[in-house]
Length: 86
Image 1 (tube, rainbow, N blue to C red):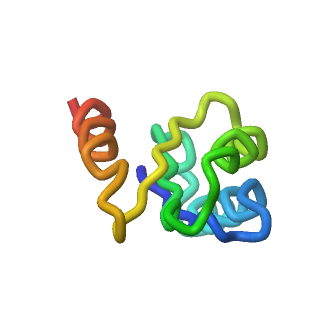
Image 2 (spheres, one colour):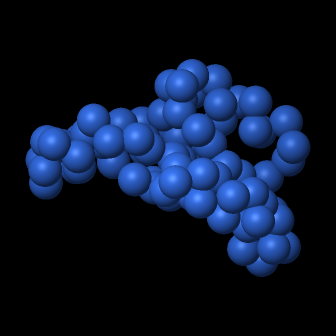
């Protein structure tokens, strides 16, 4: 399962909780599946934001930071998704 939230969100932890809540409403069985969080729009942030974002989210949640505009983190995202699918 892959969730996507933007780096410019006001509260990353709350965004993640909302997504999990919506998933639970849709199909409670999916909540127990492995999850990956993709944080997009990292080109709009500063490097120190990564630590702040990580601190607001569950520790065991794999997080990949990407910028589609700058083409950063895309290969890492592919690698993480491939690893999870194996």
